[in-house]
Length: 78
Image 1 (tube, rainbow, N blue to C red):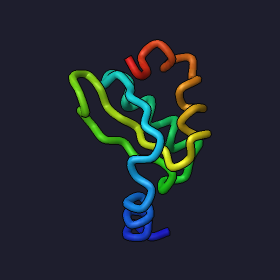
Image 2 (cartoon, rainbow, N blue to C red; image 1 turned 180 degrees about the vertical axis):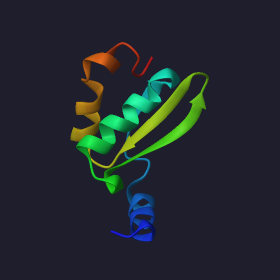
Image 3 (cartoon, rainbow, N blue to C red; image 1 turned 90 degrees about the vertical axis):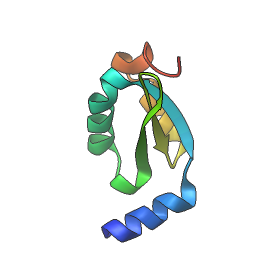
């Protein structure tokens, strides 16, 4: 998909399934998404709250899988 197609695709499904993650782990969260999902299947909105970023997933299953990552579990949806 081209960058334009990806952007348009995301506009159709966002906000999708949302997972809040502590801001210290945003880089690790992005790396996990890049390794395990296609670019059009996820998005991140930074600083949605104090020390918090929100990851958006097109599929609920991907969001639930993201929530079960041991390194993130303690810092998700607080």
